[in-house]
Length: 107
Image (cartoon, rainbow, N blue to C red; front, side, top):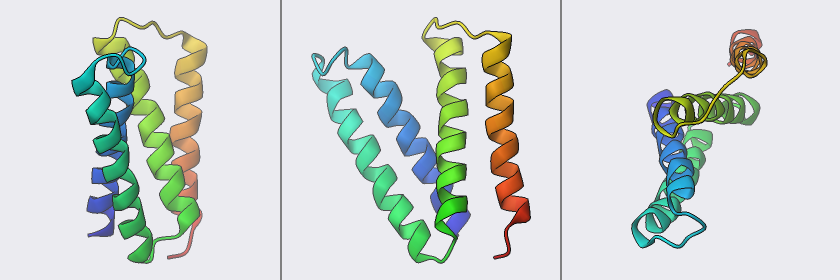
């Protein structure tokens, strides 16, 4: 259940971050509201995940790493942003680091 809640936290953070881009400096009402809802839901869900007993370092690494990777991919796929080979390598390193934290930790 904790990992399902973590997925929800990641998705909420991604919604908040994409909405931040779409809000154009908080000048558009709907995306601006979604920023607050997305980040609010993400932090509530993160708090619940931590209460369920997962280690904070692992939770934060998964949450932030997955968020960075998803936002980068969404930026390329839907927001017309570009990505270089070096940036792709950096994303791979982030994902590898998250996997290493998860596999190396004792729960």
